[in-house]
Length: 470
Picture 1 (cartoon, rainbow, N blue to C red):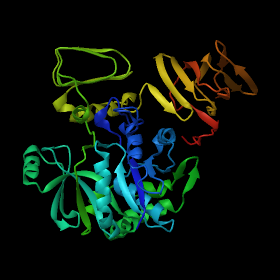
Picture 2 (cartoon, rainbow, N blue to C red):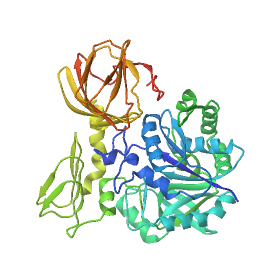
Picture 3 (cartoon, rainbow, N blue to C red):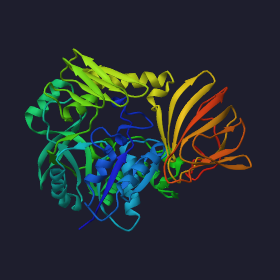
């Protein structure tokens, strides 16, 4: 019996869940419900499915977030970094090549990092029933038993019975409402979940038939891997040249080995705020509330506060999401168009589409608490034992004031210990670094002043996190 290796695809951007989800901190790494992120919940869901450690495939820009969240779970996982997004077919191909190259031919259980499955026992039971099909060489996809007409999902039309599942007759793109209703009423269609189970070799065989150029590019990318801390880096030039295609388009719509397994386990891809409202617990008036919220004469709303008191009066069917630097107010029936706002933010070069005010780094985080012409103020938190890179700035000077903890500061040829209520000045052009030698987080206020305060004004000389090229 082939062992199962779980492959977690964690490369999405989740633009419809802005302002909580942003390109450098997307929804799969957010705590949308409970005290675990979506990626952590996905990893926990499959813990113990097999003896093989899971594999997470993520964008290089998210590598430290992914590694930290995996560390928090106490799970050992391989992390393959994509130097650029190339959709699901190349990502799965990297995993299949990696698994197969080790002399094994495991079943790959391919999951997205940002899906909700409420009935995990049923999910695992369906995976178990799908296992003989995958071991026999079939490419199994999990079709969600539709609870109603849904225009936000693609559909799979089932054919003749095949073991515990059905042959796949057709994949259908996201339909309009009329066609979605017809599909659901017929009983022959499932929502396309984007989850799969197949042998690594089976997938590679079918990919070679239908998209050999993807296989060739990924093989070249995987032929020159390097290990960097927790990460596996691939050949960037080869992977960037790889075609950008979904696994459905590249393989599943072409192969005659596709089988769909019905899954009825409370699944959602949480693709918009309305889906999160449906999944959330609600009060007697249909409101899903999180954070510091006060409501009056309000019904059927989702209200999500992360930092401030949000008060509502006389609202119905509205989504309100508050973060430190942006607030979304939307009709719940139109939340699919939140991506239009993100597109405009991107086109206008605004940072709110990309970053939160609070930004996570491998050494800790910083919060940009104030800024203006020629100055910026940040609150910086450095984890015990963590160190900022040895760096220099061409356009700004910095003043560090320690609020709590102890800092070892290097400034040119000096090294000094700076403790609570003490400060140090770093002139423009000075080579400097900071280390937290203590057992508690180091908190400090950083005041920047200069002609240009962008994050790209950093010349790194040494960095324990491998960011010299970032």
